[in-house]
Amino acid sequence: MSRWHPRTLRGRITLANVALLAAGLVLAGIASLVGMYTLLVGEMDDSLHASQTGLERTSLTAQSLRRLCTTAGLVESSSTNRDTITAFDQDLFVILDPHGRTVDACLGQAVPPTAERARLTRAISNPGALATSGDAATVTSGDDHYRVAVARLDDGSMVVKGMRLNGVIRAVFHLFIVEAVVGILLLGLLAFGSLRAVRRRLRPLEQMVETASAIAGGELSRRVPEADKASAEVDQLSVALNTMLHQIEQALLTSEDAAARLRQFVADASHELRTPLATVRGYLELYQRCMLDAEESERALTRVASESERMSRLVDELLSLARLEHRPALRLRAVDLRELVHDGVADLRAQQPQRPVNVTCAGDGPVEVRGDEAKLRQVVGNLLGNVRVHTPAESPVTVGLLSRSGDAVLSITDTGPGMREEDASRVFDRFFRADPDRARATGGSGLGMSIVEAVVHAHDGAVAVDTAPGAGLTVRVTLPVAAEQ
Image 1 (cartoon, one colour):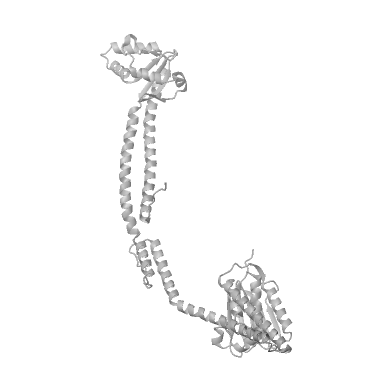
Image 2 (cartoon, helix red, strand yellow; image 1 turned 90 degrees about the vertical axis):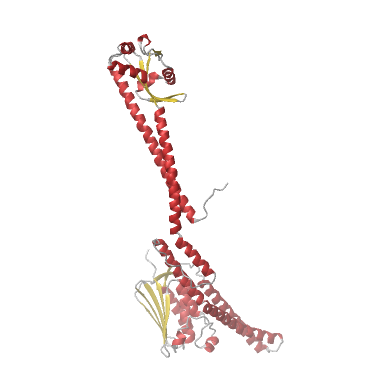
């Protein structure tokens, strides 16, 4: 069977408050009841111990106590003797012989034994052990409860002194009733007050729900109103929600632009794939119709292979960009950029031995960053590949690497034709080519710089270009250096 829980936050807070107060009242009530009972029983024990000690310090015997009782009964005119008679009548005072049997309290039956004293004597299982220990004990006879102590006299007899405990129990029970009634009233008042206070405090949250419902209905400009005398947490939540709603509205307002960019990307990708596919299809149709001689067939197959390789590179680059946009888990480790630069420069010199390449690296030690080595090699390769493809083979290039302010800065500067400002602003766009015809002839897809930007951003870095017509092009990549272990 499942437990019932309030469905509303207001009900849950009220229930929690009531439960906490109830627990506190129960603990306080238990402490007060136990304390009162202990105090009253302690006072009874003090009285019993005083009587026990007084009897044990005297040289009285059972016979002398019986004579004292008889004398007190005969001399009734003395006020002191009347007090003694009263004491014998009211207190539970029982004399036992050394074997634990009841002895008449007075010679001549001045104080005859009562049924209550007999029950009390039977309730004590071992009066001798109680006398030896000197402690007081609680005994029960039917519905009656007693606190007793036993004193041993000089002749080996024992005196049982008892006090009725029922009055203490009734007093504790009455206190329990009073505390229970007061506790129930307090819990009721707390539940009522908590419901009112929580309803007032949660009003701003209800307004937030109303605002969210209105926005879901199409009122995008709706905002959470400022609440009067609201708590700091509610104010912070209202500000955070309004900020989020503003950002959502801005995102929705720019969604058309994002959709247009997506459509343009799909169109560009389709166009890039359509051209090599058309070329491949055309050559294959000519080959199937036997319209090519041996030399032309060889050239056709070469073109088919070239276009197939171009499409394969294009698909690989598109997949690489897609993975980078989804922030993949990079294989991070300490990577020495100096080594990557030297390897990239060596590849460039092997492909274009006649190109002057100047490498300037600050210091002699490694310049380490924490990153994915394969991705960072791709960055260096793409940047140097752009220099190789888009600048004359005799044009000098300068590769610089330095570490400053906790960052590693890689710069690649060529002396090529440079770019116009409007072209430079689009250099990281997909499929962008400043010279489309020449780029297509060299096999470029227009995705190299896009991949560079995506990889650098995935490593929490930044990339920028500096160029002008006729002034060459400089690309600067900034990456955070690896923290020292």
